[in-house]
Length: 448
Image: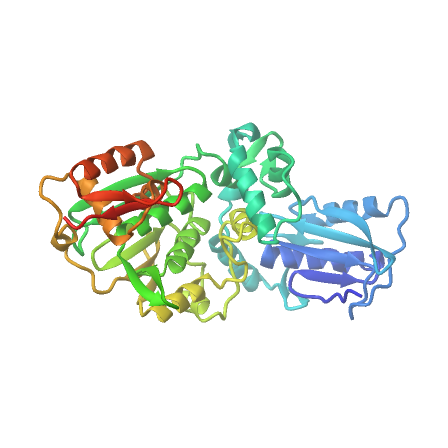
């Protein structure tokens, strides 16, 4: 039998005779977490006793919440049998800054609802204004029909594979509705950012020749859905960092000089928690001695990176709707463990990483080790090759047997037609050759 337990986001009530106390709990949970659940028909100790349900019970609960909670919310209220007994379940959420119940303000503290003094209320307002960005819950001008169906289908499949989404894809509209990303016929800003190719969000990426922001070796501007941006940034890092090989169980295993799991976590975090009202965009900068991932959004008010690194602080979603979508797709974990995972991955690889607040946002810096000077990267290449051919040849040398499609991914999505043309040029000049069958073969350096 399922055992229920109260928490910071769950409230148990024996019956609707405790409706006033339940509304106060809804208020305090909204002010602390933005969403939660109230059960009617369950004792404080978790025993299911059931709730008598009449014709107007659901209506009365809904009206009481609407009348006594400000600003108004529209909870999902349903009757469900638990342990064979009727219970009422109220699932609620709200993006607004601060809620009051019966004219007073409350904040969740463990399983209790704490009434706030004037000074505590003033401090809560300051914190709330610096915790959650309202941008994501605002209505955009983009109609639901502009959402990219392929991205939504891929999202649902990822969520189902991860065990975090139970429903199957039926339509883009229904999926977006279930994610609370729509209002009427329009997408909320968070929905547009997550699932529209045309969302006006970009990440600037660059590779520099030295440790200073002076000479560019490459510069890109990535656009697309937030899921597209994650993949493009990860591919860019893979293409411009060094790979190292080691033998594990008699097999050659190649790893990136900086753990790609840590880099991806930092990329996802920078997009999930950025301030989208800030005109600056996210930036990915690769120097000879480090990688910097910049986010135009600072750490939550009154918190430092160290609190999250040590695992002492729960996750604070600056953009809750975006964070929820990333969680369902298993791009993030909900419990604020991202920074700790980054540190653990880097520690295991012997890589130094630093987190810091700066005036315009926040930044994660990965420090590289034993990086060769730029002039050595092209060592051994035949003079006369342009930069595109040289970069392709370097990858073939480092990845014997690589296929054309994988070369495209390694080279930041360089078009396959361009890859094919450049491969032909390198074969004609006898720098590389193809070995193996059409299905399993790949390209190898011939040692020129």
